[in-house]
Length: 167
Image 1: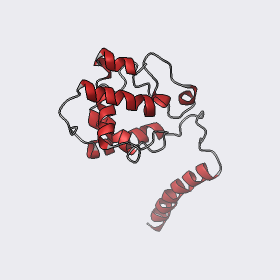
Image 2 (image 1 turned 120 degrees about the vertical axis):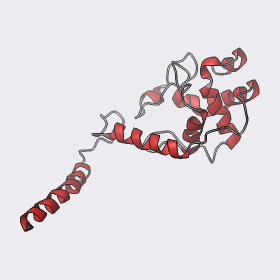
Image 3 (image 1 turned 60 degrees about the horizontal axis):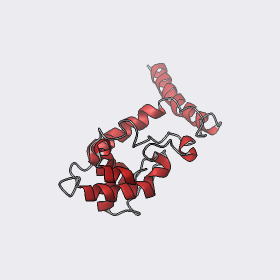
Image 4 (image 1 turned 60 degrees about the vertical axis):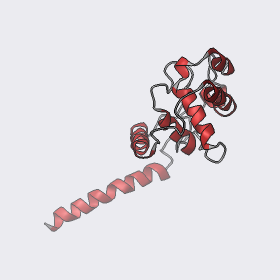
C-alpha cells in the first residue's frame, strides 16, 4: 500500500514539475506569431464564456437602439475600436494582423451581431485577459459603452446615416 501512495504522490508531483519546466525552459510560445499552447484557446474560451454567463448585464439601461444612440456608438467605434477591429468595407490594419489572438473584424460578416449587447458591453467594459482587448471602464462612460455595444449588436441593420459614419 505504501508503494501505491508513493507512486500516486510522485505521479501528481510530476505534472506541476512538467508544467514548470515547460515554461521555465522557454518552451511555451510567447510570440504572437507562435502557435497557441496546448489547450490555450479552448481553456481561454471556456473561462471567458463561463464568466460572461455569470456577469454580463442582460438589458441595456435604455429600451432601444435609436438612430441617435447608434450614431453615437459609431463615433465611439471609429475613435476607439476601428484601429483593431476595422472599419466597414476595409481590411484590418497591419497592427491588427500582427495580434494574437487576431481581433475579429466586427463590421464584416456576422461580427458580433448574434451576441447579446450585454456580452459585448462586458467585453468593452472589462477587456479580455491575454488578448490585446483593453478594458474601457476608465475611458468611456457606461452610456458610451452601451452605445457602441448596441451599434455592434445591430451592425447588420444600421440606418444609412449611421453606416456612413463607419467608413
